[in-house]
Each structure stands twice: as C-alpha cells, then as structure tokens.
Image 1 (cartoon, one colour):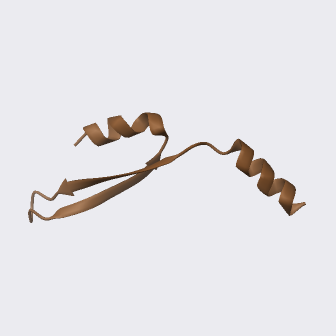
Image 2 (cartoon, rainbow, N blue to C red):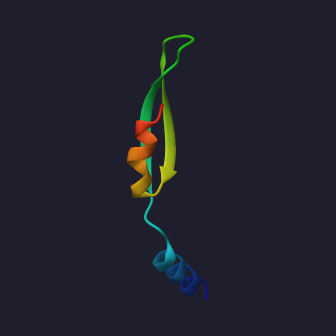
Length: 50
C-alpha cells in the first residue's frame, strides 16, 4: 500500500527549481545568499526584482 502512495505522489508532483541569488547588504556591504524554491516560469521574475 505504501508503494502505491509513493508512486502516485511522484506522478502528480510538479517540477520545481531552486534559485539562489547574491544580495548585497546596504548596512555592512557584505553579500548574503537568498534561496527560494519555485516553478521554472517564475525564476526570471524573482531574479529581476531587488
């Protein structure tokens, strides 16, 4: 029964992308990394905004 559940989750799962961008802190000037998991269509929008 567990195998059926796992198989159904794999077929119905969406394709996701992990995006990472460097963000410079205005306070200290150091760079930090901002990570987010989203659909591939939204990656360019997320990277474009500050």
